[in-house]
Amino acid sequence: MNNKSYILVKAATNIISGMSMATLIILGVLYIGFNNAFVFNNAGIAVTNNPVTGGQINFILEGSREHKCILTRVHSDAYNDDTGERFELDFARKIYIRSNDYLGSDTGEVDHQWAMPVPEGMLPGLYRVTLYSEFNCTYLLFEKTKVQMFDNISLTIE
Amino acid sequence: MDKVRNQKIQKQVERWDLFARLTPTLFLLTTMVLILFDIVDLEYAFYVGLIGFAITAVSWWWWAIFTIRYLVITLARASSNLTEVNDEITIVKKELSELKDE
Image (tube, rainbow over all chains, first blue to last red; front, side):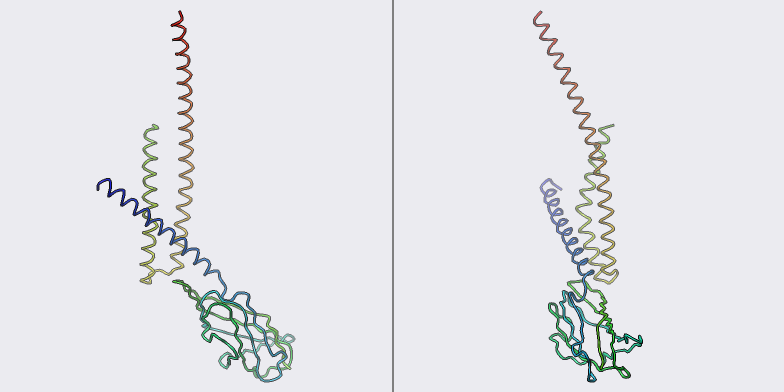
């Protein structure tokens, strides 16, 4: 290898190595950001028709979402404040009242409203609702299963 | 002794240079292929990269400290020797000047 080719090879490897290092650092930082991000930011769930007089509980979820996340599993329980009795809310019978994103994959502001029937045997009183949700989130070439929980959602049944 | 050590340091610098030039690209390409063929997942590759990065950083840091210390010692010795030579030249010049005057 003559001197000129040696200089060219050295310069090329310098550039390629620099670009690879920059790519690795950028991907690493993006991965850490994605890994640590919540599904919803500044989010809250509330019952909009408190006290519930009919057979339907209306919920609202407001917040924002940074990454595309598809809901894969959801579970919600209501606990009686006095007796501690647990009632499972039936997500199979969930009805959307308002949502601009039924698949739950859009990013940006989230405004979901849905309704679920009052579980059988639920007596009037104050309840605390917890909601456990599992998502499959994707961002660029990253993919991760994330869990977000909401608790202490106040529900009054009349 | 110094000459041998200087050559050693020069060789080490060349090795670091080669390592810095090849490792990022090799790691990036290998990881991409392994992830593409589902041999490792991204999280695993991330932690391997992180550990490799940490080991490299710590090794380089200690190597740099020892090398700089050696260079500083060498520089101080050279400087001291030069001062000695300078003093001796001054004495010789003075003696020569005295001889001329006689």
